Amino acid sequence: MASDLYSQIRNSRGSLERMVARLPGFQGYLDRQARRQADRLIRDHLATAIS
Image (cartoon, rainbow, N blue to C red; front, side, top):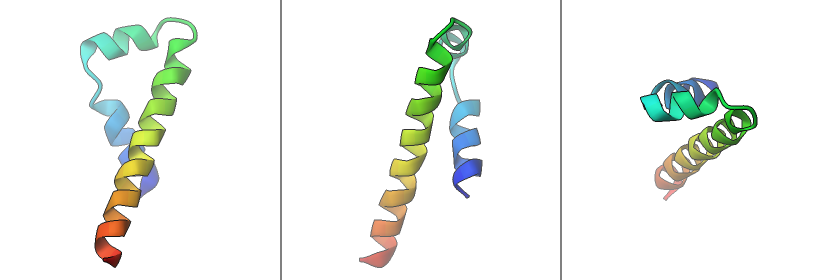
C-alpha cells in the first residue's frame, strides 16, 4: 500500500518538479518529500479509522 501511494505521488509531479528532479541532488530531496507525504497520508488514514 505504501509503495503504491509513494509511486502515485511521484507520478503526479508537475512538469517543473520533473525538470528539477533531473538536477543533481534534487531528486533525493523530492523523493524524500514524497515518502514523507505518503507516510503522512497513511498515518492520517489510520488515525481516522481508529477513532
